[in-house]
Image (cartoon, rainbow, N blue to C red; front, side, top):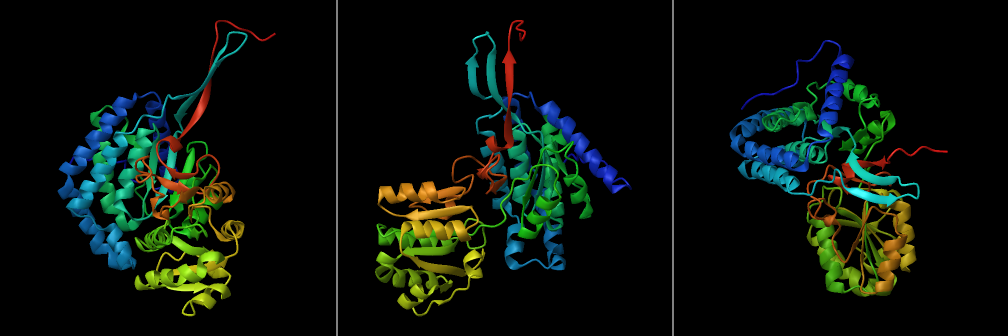
Length: 428
């Protein structure tokens, strides 16, 4: 594998970080007018290269796995870190999927002709430079690089030290593919120092970096939000709700809720709280509780829920605010749809919230009034994912309202500019 790495670390950490950002800024300028087919070809070449370098990537991953016990990783974290032939193929397929998406850059969002003859176009353009800080998952390295490149952005990757060797191997492959297609290798850079102070240096460079994206634990996201001088795209937690309306089909409600909670519990779009309309609680909740406890889920609830199912534990105020990321779920019985919306708006994290109902008026009222990035109607919260929603690999899920919300793919890494064309007009 041809190595196209960044220069060696300079003695001065701040200067070294700035050099990385300056190279990214120059690369972003060079990418700004690259045609979509060229970017797509480079991404397809990167996918081919990832496949052809599977052995080297797995060898690097073995180094990370051997070091994992020293970092105190949980079994689940080690599993997310581990690569095999099938997972490397999945990484390559993910890059190919991004290559197959329409190029968002250059799209004309609005156009109008003014009375004085000026032609005004509002055109989609790349953001520029993205600083991406993320957990120790090698596939995220490739996904983020692909999404950034497809949208014409340069990206600075700061992955977890636990996946350092795996991420380096993947980035070298991607950079080689860029060079082969005469694109700037520095459009994708991996921060090559583990020093946590490096993050602070990058977060201060609002003159070079346009957007910071933290993807990891809440403490990391709070640090980035506190220190960043540039906009931050993030979500703090995924306290996701399923509300079962009195008009819900019971079989659907049980199936969707179990999937939302149990299909994979340690992810941000897993359901953490169940709300049941009082009109169907007696007939539905006992069976629902059996379904969930059969999957090892501990239920805690309010007095009304415990009256219907005595085995449910007592929920505290904090339980309703908690993203468990594991086999525990809060339960509440609500007297109305509006009470459910009020509960979600009070305790939720504006990530993903679902309604199970057949009443179209109830569905519309819930979808309009609940303050959340993604509303699922008669479907599992687990579908809040870029790939599942048809936008390709995502770089994260945003619970912000500016400038992007929900799963963020290539379009969400763009902004716009006005291009005003005339034939000599002057203002009187």
